[in-house]
Structures are given as C-alpha cells and as structure tokens.
Image (cartoon, rainbow, N blue to C red; front, side):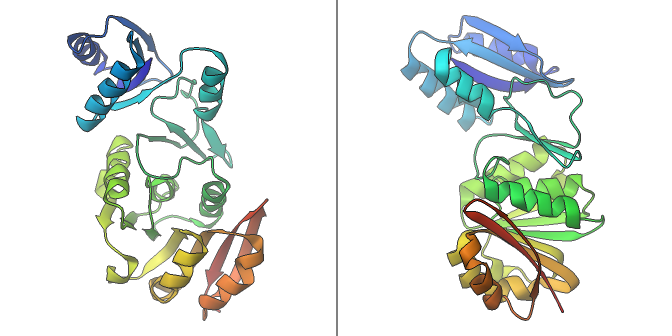
Length: 268
C-alpha cells in the first residue's frame, strides 16, 4: 500500500493522477481541516515502491505503508503527532491521526533528518520553546528536515537561515518551509557554517560532538551579543569537554535524556 498526502482542494486531481498511473483501489482519510491522505493499493509491492519513487521525484508527498499486522501498528505509532509544551506539534504530512486541534502544527514531508522523535531533536525543540521570545533571527547549522528552524518560526522568530552540506537535506528543508507557509521567512542553503557572514540572536546545531568541535569557532562567532547557542547530539559525559571548545560562551542550561544531552550557552 502507498500513502499520499494532499489537500482537500488537490484531492480530486491526485486521485485522477493515481488512477492514470494504474491505481484502482483508494481510500481517503481526512485527518485535518485541509489535509487529505490517500491510501492506495497495488498488487505488487515492487510496483508500489516504483510508484512512490516516481511520485516523489515529481514533488508528491508519497511513502509506502504497511497494510496490516504488527508493521501497521508500528507505522501508526511512529506517525502519531508529537506535542511540545502545549505550544508546538510536529507530524508527517501523511499521518492518518487526527490533528485538527493540535497547537502550533508543523507538518513534514519526506527527506532530511529530524521529525521530533529522536531524543536529540526533542531536546532541541524543548530549548526553543523556552528560549524563543519572538522576533529573533535564527541560524540552524546542519538543518536536516528544517524542523528546528520551522519550530522557531512557529514560536514567532522573525527569520531563519538553515544550512547543511547535504543537498537533499537543503531541498527537504525548503520544501517543508513552503509546506508550512513559511517560505518567505526561511532560507535554506547548501553551505558550511563558516560561509555564513552574519550574526544571529539564536544559533542551533544538532550535529553531534565531532561536528560541534570542528565548527566551534564558527558557531561561537555567529552568536550575536546577548544571543545564545544550543548544541545537541552529544552524550552527558561529553558536555564539559564540548562546552570547553565553545568558550568564551558559557553553559547556562543542560538537559539530558538517557545517553543524549543538549547544551545551551551564552556570553558571560
């Protein structure tokens, strides 16, 4: 089975398109006011995979989906929306779960790391809910899906610059910005952090210890006076060492969850 995310206005056209591609059996789920999810079955799973690849190459938000059993139950668990601090919610566009009344909804299409389920991403989003006051300019280093920048914008940041060296991540982040109506405030670029020539009120980098250490000088110099830096993807045992590489910024907050930790640093 395949799952295709579309809108109420685009539903008829999407169903017609799928029929033209050989799909004969379709069900439609309406998980939100605007979102529609088309569930379509083909006889051969290999045909489903090829169809999904073709649709995604054309910009359609399509994925393969289990039909039944334990695999389907896991799918449904993994596509359940996640809410943060009663202010933000994140889910995949093809989620079949109701989300009509979710606060601060961010939907994500295919591609790019980060959908809110990994502990490092959750920690970084929690930092954003506490630190973003409104009107900030934010730099997201190693943006993946763009989830952190999109959450910052939903929390009333003014603008986001998102950089990644992976072109697929950059493309996914920009698509997700457009999907959420944030394209005018979100700039994604395939660029290393050292090529960014401005300072920001907030800098976030969920890029693991090696990336943080390698980019430490660039991360520090991108933080504006009175700004702050959040770094994630490290272990609790690495916190003090990582903080040392980020001087003269000093640790102002630390959160841990199992084997993962996130640091927030600011000028003294």
